[in-house]
Length: 339
Image (tube, one colour):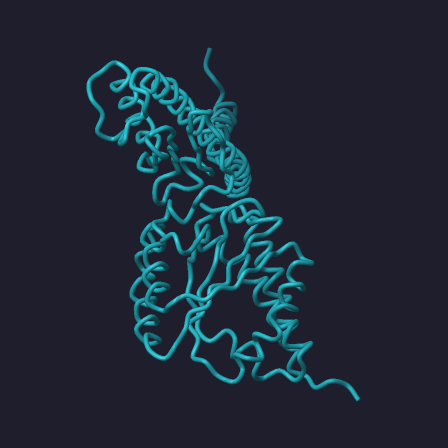
């Protein structure tokens, strides 16, 4: 039976409609849905992956602990060095577990012993640049078992010297104490200005560390360095600092200020930037360090916060709020007191 010409045209039009592609609106909606799912799924996946990784590290430590106690029962002492053990069954098992820990991107060079090799401690942390990826805490193995160290030592993980404690400096600015105390009309406004600026920095530092370090109240501290040329305003800053600290504390931000040498500060910040893979920042930071190498001191402003910024979305929200607050405080602080 022949198809009528009119019906044939209708059939062709219908086929063309069925073959049409996605509209721009449909594609935008699809991309938005996929993006939302990814934003939820990826952080959860990374967290689960990190938890699994840390559990494997703990299992390796448990194995090491068992065989270390066996060695002590045999020799009445613990090995002086676990990175160059012999070929006994226990020693081979320990070496294999150390290798397993390294594969999990944790360190194995934190082994120390007590008097007469009667005790030991093996401390393992995420390797340099892997804090918040391989794990977010250190573990300590002793003859009594394994303990978790939520504070950990992020400084060690990022190649920072012991004199920096548990603080990781990620940025350098200049003459903060002068800016915060020289051009404002009253001490009350100076305190408000400095607190607003430091709140802004506390948020900013999380993004500068690529969210690999969570500076929680029980975790490592993030910090910035201010290279200072001493002036009369430095004394004023020291007098106002306790009030600034209290103002920040009321907002859940805990500030500590310590002095370091310019040379040590420059070396440390550059090491952290390298560990983070931020090679583009190195030339500028080195230039600033050279500029302030003489007749200067370095102040470290380190922060631990009740609610750290964990990802880019949180950062944008918190940073926008802190930035607006700082701009508002700054503009108001420059106005003379009424009356």
